[in-house]
Amino acid sequence: MLNTMKSLIVHSVILPLLLITQCSARVVLNNYMADRIRFLEEENNLHLGSALKLTEEEKRANEILMYWKNKEIEESFGNSTRFRLSNHFFSYKKEISKSKVYQMIRRMPKGAALHIHASMMLDADSLLELTYEDHLYACFADDGLKLHFSGTVPSQSCPVNWNLLKDLREASDDVEQFDAELRKHFSLYTEGDDLLNADINDIWEKFNKVYRTTKYLITYRPIREKYFYKALENFYNDNIMYVEIRSGLHNIYELDGTTHDSLYLAQLYERITKRFIEEHPDFIGIKLILTTGRWKTIEEVRHSIATAKELKAIMPNFFAGFDLVGQEDKGKPLKEFLPALIEAKNEIDFYFHGGETNWFGTSSDENLIDAVLLGSKRVGHAYALLKHPTLLGTINLKNVVLEVNVISNVVLSLVRDVRNHPLASYLALGYPVVLSSDDPGAWDADPLSHDFYVTFVGVASKHADLRMLKQLALNSIRYSALDDDDVRKTRFYDVFNEKWDIFVKKIIENGF
Image: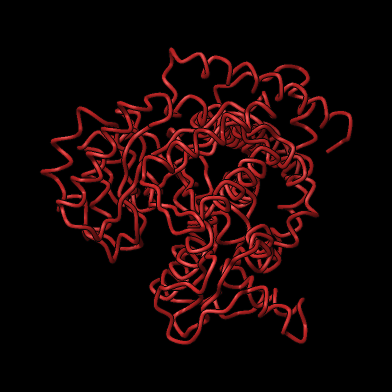
């Protein structure tokens, strides 16, 4: 009888309570999972490109792209030491070409490269080829390599002797080894460890040496023509249709020593671009952002601004704006040039570098504030922007565009593991971002494909897909210095859309 009563109590009281508890737990869990899904959806809806609607063909291509992207990431997720993009770019550069994701990105139309320094556009192998031109003299000294084209021994100072490079090459026991050593003067890229842990100031010093040697080579007018045409060809082959170059427009010379002024170089760039477009009619063109060094005096900056105004008057379709360049930690901040810059801000557009630094609360990162207050159309690098929350909100409200150069930031020692790059946050917040490559020739990088690949696989969310890649390309058109009523901009969109459709079909056909 007692057992029967206990059984009735279990069935009538305890079991319903258990059922209620289980049901309640399921409700709590379901509600929790719904909240979790909502959080993720809300975050994903903020990501750059999330508002784009894919066509049915794009959806199929996206499935293929994401299959290969997820495969790459998941192979490393369980063992992060295998994630190569967490290391220095030089350590994995040669391996990138094996990636199916990279192969797709390489074929992808990328729109424009908007942050490119004209003297560092071309790869070291192409520069090495130019050293086979006649009349090239070399001066090898402790402070680097000087080069000069001349019909006779150059009169410029040399701590040792000027020699024809052709004679030095022929006199060497091993021409291949001679060229391999010569090539090192045109690139920071190395397969050794000497640069992988370099101090930021040391790496900038080495970078400036590469810049000076390259500049010596390409200051000769016939070589500059070949250099620039080949650079445009490389960018075009990387599926870039428009480039905005930054240049100080230094003088260039002829073999007899005759020199041409800065306006001549601007006209040379424009002339070569027109010839390139004749031979590549789907290339849109270039524009120039005139630069001067941030180590200059305010009067020298005023002189450069006067040149910028002259360029704008003479070549309005070619001139884009003005910038100050050089290592921010070592150079003068924008605030030191405020009188000259404020005078000019309503006459020319600014495209200032800002915040290319790891410091916080210094003149380097606070350049960002002055860049925004001066009305800079875009801000170069903006690496330190996350440390300035008020400015971050202002940039979003004003739609100030961020020109991000991921591989440049790795090579110049701002960041090693790209997963920690602030670009991840800019993309997650859906900020107006364009990708560029800064000085791709100096680190043997693609004109743009390497930066897109590293960003897509190493920086952006694992969930970031074809929409983000497309939006980055579209941003480069939208935020270029081409005016909205410029027929070139309308044509740019048309050419891009045609190439994009072909790209999508190719992914579907190839399976990658």
